[in-house]
Image (cartoon, rainbow, N blue to C red; front, side, top):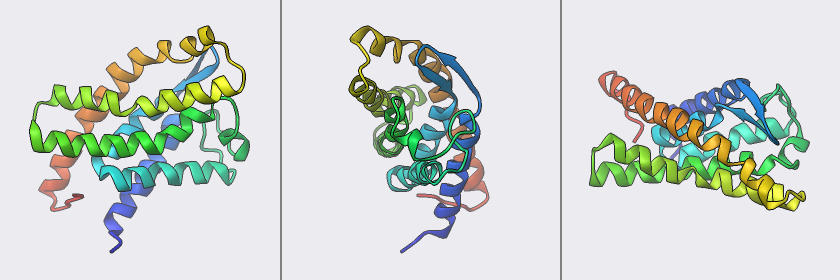
Amino acid sequence: MVNVIKLCFCAMCATLTAILAQIRMKIFLVPYTMQNFGVVFSGLLLGAKYGFLSQLVYLILVAFGLPLASGFRGGLGILLGPTSGYLLGFPVAAAFSGIVRKIWEKTSKNILLLWIFVNLASLPIYIFGCITLYIYGAKMHLLLLAILPFLPQDFFMDHFFAVILYKHVKEILKQKGVLLD
């Protein structure tokens, strides 16, 4: 059965990712954006299935040409270019974030542990990004430059704040009687 509330939240998370794509700065080959915040947050809030769906919706909208990718760009070329792997990792990382949240809820309520799990769940973004850069001919030292500068920002800002916001939003929704699980 389709959960209309979750579908609305999917649209919200896809929109959040699109907005965060516009907060950017270029570091080496890849523009750094705040999108990882949206990816992780969607997985935490919506769970694996709907988190995946929210990021898939974002990518489909980009593919159809809506200017939602970094730098207000859109089109199929964005999803076929040298940095496309990062974007293609979004749905997988959102799903993994939803999975680790479920595991975390059953095993521990330690927020630090959730943050560690989420950092591991986001690895597909970097793995897919490296694969596409490699396919496009990037040398190993360039692959390191395409990942290492982003890790501190992603881990200590994007993922940390996604975990904190998730906890607060979940509590607010619970108080309002909205359960997304």
